[in-house]
Length: 274
Image (cartoon, rainbow, N blue to C red; front, side, top):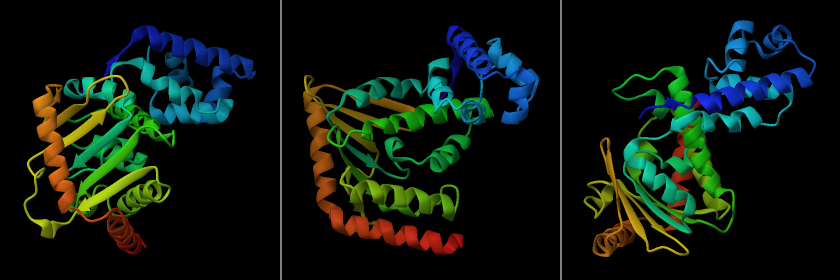
């Protein structure tokens, strides 16, 4: 996964920062003192020479009272915000009316908390700078906005028990993440099912899949492996993926039982964190 800066948007970001700073009656030095950033760094951002980090954007929003504007502006600085193999699936995800995904070891992106996502994006075989990680983090968190509407898309999340047990970032991060999933489920925003370890082999054990339906398009299936992914539109392949999902769902715990397990594991993490 790589980030490529968009220089035009970076210049616009700098111009907007300068305008908001001057409207607030602050010099670069005054802003630097309040935002706990160097004056040189602010000057570079305003000139479009440097890409602000997520922390930079949040500090600027807080000092300038811009209600998250500079944080929301960050994704426009990137010409490529996700892995190439996922770019097409991301476009479909934003249009879907129904999403049913299966996760084998990590929480699905649209359900990840900031702390969990930060840990995932900080890891990996290829090291990333803080700027690269923060750019990806903004994009990852923006995906969760598909859940802002109560009615669409309808989201079902099928989680292998390994998702709950794999310690990403430690007990505090895991407790927060599982409580977030539980809150979404309790508010009826998502439906969640867990495939327990004692199920043994199941129809989706060999990979991860996301099924999507649309108002005006045929359904698609996105299948992903290590650094690879493919969107399938061929009806026969999509149907095979749907059948495999249904078989695995039949082996899973009920929504009520899954929610109870998620809350129980979250409580265990919470006790451990204390």
